[in-house]
Image 1 (cartoon, chains in turn yellow, cyan):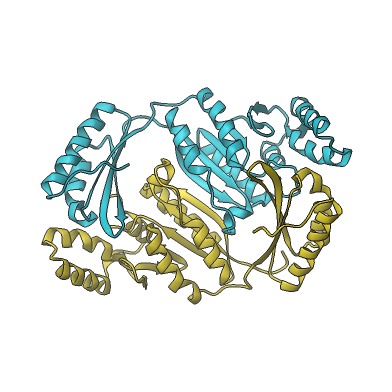
Image 2 (tube, chains in turn red, yellow):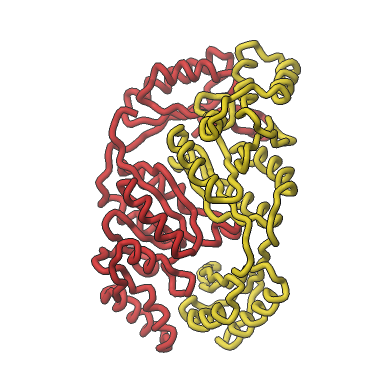
Length: 252
Length: 252
């Protein structure tokens, strides 16, 4: 594409995502929300609760992308090691954040937590020195340091964090899309689609096969930053479908 | 863990996964199936339909993991570039595989495909020189070269491929799990769980918060290769829950 995108890498942290126990529910939501403010997710990695891997991956991707967003590993138990790994990646100490600690102590009072339980909860108040807080309406805050944003793995908490964070990011022009479907096989339209992609080289064309209760078809998706160009390519895609003897279908 | 695991990296290839359009449905299935034959998925990456990124990522991960499995980008359209990227990563030519080509020509005859459509479909018969085929009951075959296994992105096709492929892989002892839940917060049991993790250092303990219609709790999961040790740790986890005044719940 012809514009300079603002790029992001998403790190999904947790053994449970790699064992098959848990189906990730965060990447698609993050990608959609970030795209709305002009930040393009260009890569995502799912990595285990392994300090060496987390630290190496963080240091590799934070140098290569404008933004990094992590989910997972910021709870109160022994397998929640994201905060200490981020601190180590940035070579800064992990410190108790008084603002988070106060919130947790407030909860502790209301819920009548014992001192032991409070101490465990306060693990969630430790952030790398110099980190900014990421507010949330649900659970404890996340934090950011430099271009790395550390969020919860629980979808409801992550969603609250990113909804507040996204408007503060410096994005490029958001990528928009148009789509249209047809009961045509991908092979049938492959050549015409290649020709269209060459004609509209400032737009990304994708083709995705579908199966509607045994009826096969293809969804064609155009993505780009210029609405007028997208309208033009959509019209060309509809004509392509009609030229191949099928009817354009509303599909996303 | 105390045994030498056989490791795998999964590459999920496709712009649609990074734009938020499509929710990945392959990683959890792959991880579960591979684990059954003793292959541990240690990392997954979601990467775009970008030749440079695909080739660099392939060459980086195939050197670091025992196995690499890719999904996506092996259809007949211009954005299906996985086969040519794998060929380039291995520095071998992309060649027409006669076995796949014959299958496609067979389909073409049955379906009365035009020559143009057949030509596009035959894109799917191109594999890197020296590749082995990965059979499937659905769609066109995938292929493997060295330790890299190239599969379809469509879940039904990928699932057919991996079901036939998995039993042929050389795995270690499969990782098994035990789990138990309780209506207890993670903070409440964090210290006891850390102590248990230190006692059972050949088992991975994970804790995952849940919310059952407003009732909060935690699922505790133990993963390891020794069934007797897992039974012992499960018993200890149940006792831990009882000691904290709650009831062990059946949860996975």
